Amino acid sequence: MRSGVRIGVDVGKSRVGVARSDSAGLMAVPVVTLSRATALDELDVLARDYDAIEFVVGLPTNLSGGETPSTADARDFAKALHERTQIIVRLVDERLTTVSAQSALHAASHDTRSSRAVIDQVAATLLLDTALDAERAGNKLGETLGES
Image (cartoon, rainbow, N blue to C red; front, side):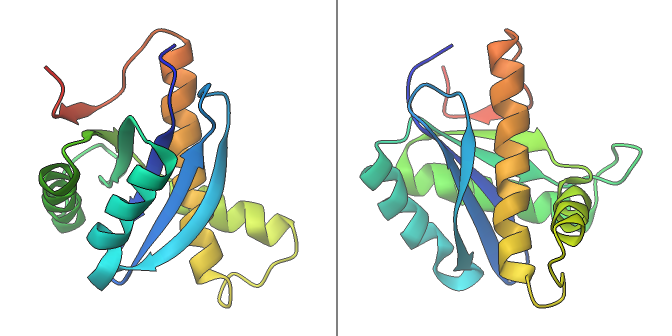
């Protein structure tokens, strides 16, 4: 397992949920929900503040794994994020992370309609946890931008 902070990113049309790992890559925690309009700038700052080694960006697909308009949007966002920061970006299948986040918050008695920003952070946390689990198991999930 590589040492260093990873930043999980759940890209939406208007908001971007952000989570981060500890430097050992053992656990992910929610950080913030950003406006999509300023997310690239703010992620650049967060990556430098945390000395991040990688971004893990959710790649939304349909339930059968096919591409959707949101898939292309996430790929474009990931490419722009890599170009902006020059940090490795890993695109990881995020099927059901938002649904899982909503379920977890509902089970904890949160009103999911008034908790959309929190849902985005929890989705980013679940996504990052999935990537960390895979890396600990010796697998690298998804496509990568910027890794030679």
